[in-house]
Length: 432
Image (cartoon, rainbow, N blue to C red; front, side, top):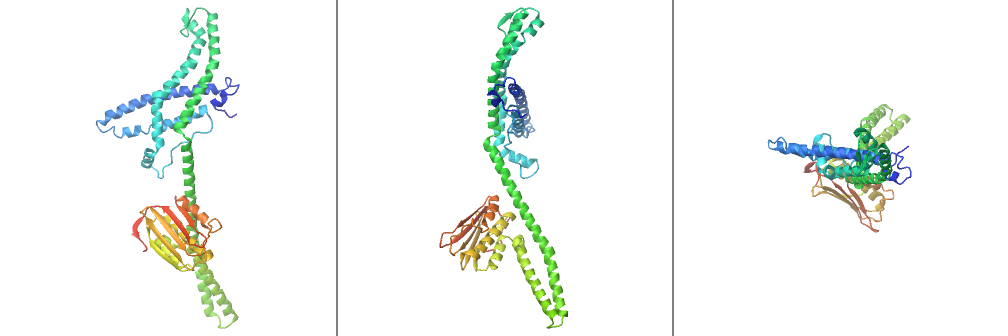
């Protein structure tokens, strides 16, 4: 049976007979113990760090104290399951891009969650655990003293003052006090449960805020999309390599074999005619395969960069293309996305625009944003959602935090613009 939260249990009739009130007690007792440890450990660590600073040994210790909120917050998020078993409080911290302690430390120092957790640790040490102790004393202390009256009378053997209020000298009155303690305990468990629930809600708000959960999920979605794009690009390269080194080489060998066979066949014979047809057909297949390989991932893009690849695509376009390119070498995913967006734009211009000329302008603006504009003077009215192939490219560019926009009023001109934030890998431009 799945346990319900203490707050939900309080609204049911079986609250006193369930584990909910005692889970609230365990949660508050744990808060008192943890708060005392944090207070003592924090004072000792701060004192030791300040003392050792005089001999420079304590200088690294003081920055480490700022990170002590991280394990405390992790333990507090885990303790929340005592009061509210579901859902589990997520961590607001991101995963470092690179392995190792330096990358982890650098990321944690920059995160707001780290300083929020440190503030919570200070709040726990100075304010929260005394409040927890006070609530336990008010709701459990007095009933516990009354319930323990018979045991106290047996130990003392004479008169006792139950709960520091009433003098008791016999067991009937002692057991009456114990019964009164049980009667008082039942209603006092309700404010205790309410306080434990509020205390847990405050911890969840500070240590696992909803916006942090959404940011963590969004960050993970972005990372997963980036991993998918990287995997897709790696698979594209593998296919290109296999076709280039496998099928293309076999076709070259077949073409050469057919060419040699034509030389051995008698001129004008039916065999010579068939060999000539087969030789030409093999040459056409080889040409198409080379175009296919170039379309999967052109070698010029990997060797010479985006500017050279755009120039090559413009030279092979079926309509004239003017280029104005000034680009350095950029990160490989950026160059690949920019190239395929440009090539798709040229394909759409040739098929749908009725334009007689296209213009491509590409710049690395302010050394931080790649911008490519592909313009044509065609009919206009282009809709990127109607099967032009730009939707997938837009998603791919979005993974790189970029944007792809199409402006195409009726009558033209149509302008496709790509913007991708990036930094240059090499300063020199490879095309003018």
